[in-house]
Length: 188
Image 1: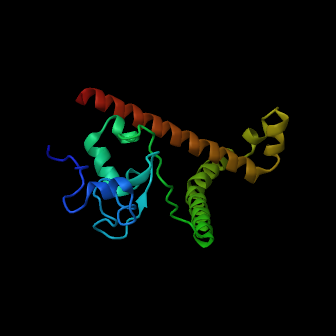
Image 2: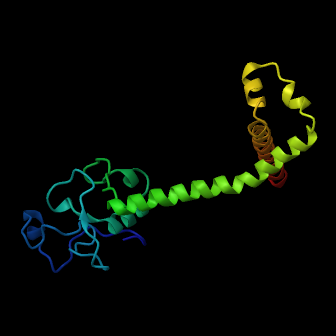
């Protein structure tokens, strides 16, 4: 046997006829390690493919080890029945309190990011207001939609700050990506 391969032969202490007949003593054991419980003792047996009888059940950790050793076709398909492997979904938030808690945390992070972005946007709005002290820029628009916006100076200058902040942010990301690509081209 090669190093790293998993043995699929029954152990000497078990009878092959017991395994084939599906007797109650061996009906729910892992087809790879041939144990009912894994070494940790708390891992359940799953049936990820179309195999029947004693070949049906396997520990998730045993199957993962088998898949990593075999690779290729065996990584996504059963080597016995050739069916695609399907794993049970693990729900980290299975009770309703946890899902509401997660939504509250997500809402908190969105609100926090909103607050973090306000000072640079307000600085851009203040800069636009300082450059347009007499309001000529604000009143120079002929478009009706912008004219409605220009009637409300706080909203107008905030919009200028918003557009200028995200424009500079996008331009900064573009320059950073260009520098990273040039650096990677020089290194390789």
